[in-house]
Image 1 (cartoon, rainbow, N blue to C red):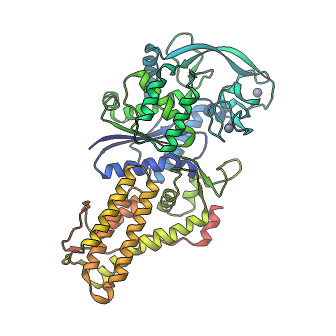
Image 2 (image 1 turned 120 degrees about the vertical axis):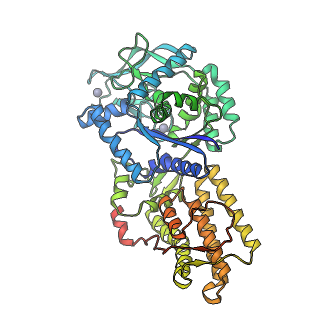
Image 3 (image 1 turned 135 degrees about the vertical axis):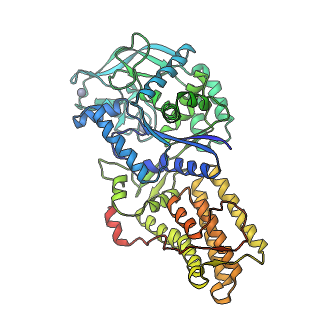
Length: 531
Ligand code: ZN
Ligand code: ZN
């Protein structure tokens, strides 16, 4: 049994999350956490909201409220929505909390004492009209890498490139839209990982778990050469710098965001216990992050850890690609996509969303959420295949055989072998964080059960053996579906009247409880609610 710390990238709290956010980190992290608990590992599933920095300050300014008011509001919104989607966080924390500030400052001082921090004078954009320094999102311009014309000063949303404001082509002030911007000399602190490049590269090369896409992206950064990266910002909303000369600055969010996993653990189990876990080489840490977050978790975070010389390096950084909506990017302003509040208000059962999102998780490439396909997959695969199999077997046993499942007398060795091979594949896919394939294999196993019963026709032939096998497949399906569909799995095990979690086929006699219909069909009229 391992101790696994599972994390999902900490979202900014300036808006309501959409299905792409769910599929890009929270849902896969939840599936992995639930699977790890199922296998008996000691799991700490840590998340939270990223509340510091310009994104927050900027959004608050746009709404005419304070950053704290904005964060207090959206923290509750995020927390409730993830919980509504059955994301089983053990702690969902906030980077505005005192414990986070303290742990970030300690982490910084370790890096500072280990000579990983340097000081430089850089040119910072200043808006002559707003009379204000323009950090990150306060400055917009054309991306020098891909030509997208609304790239932020810190990152291009379109191609994912991490940027410096000075690189932007034709920059303008995001607040007043003026191009009257000057660059002024200012003193800032930098994380200098240049001497650690070899160590970071060694970690990338020797990590057997990173997906090829993630590894390639990380190696691309190494090849380009890792530059010093600024970790301070001219802002008031954020974490204070614990050395003199920096009283009017705070940490740049990318630097403190990732340390949120550590402070979130400390908040849950206490600082000393968290230290012990994070500093134990046996602890496995899994990070589920979207595409734009991959460099921060495969280059900078391992670099921060190597430089600090205390914490365990990532076991796996599960980098996901983007989920699009009907072939377009999700966008609040353009009204593209389904946001989580709308999904909840639609009345479509939560597990349907989880099922379809798992089916299309952007694990190896960008994927598309299509409403027609969503309805098809639910009605044909979830209900037509899985739900139907469970219902027909359990209903027949309950109504025609007084709920009695007979003992398996004639062992069907070939069929049992097929079942166990399927379970083996499902486990391997879960272990490798390939949840789409785990789901496809689960549907194949359900299909196998359906076909077996069609062939044996127990309703005609009184072949009770095949019913007993049907019971066992349903039991195994409910166990292995539980990371994706936790509530229906719970229901099924109450129908089955058993807590048996063994993989081996149980040949003994059993008695089931009255089954109920598991899933209701989606009607075409419900599509309107999603438009
Ligand atoms: Zn301005
Ligand atoms: Zn770009």
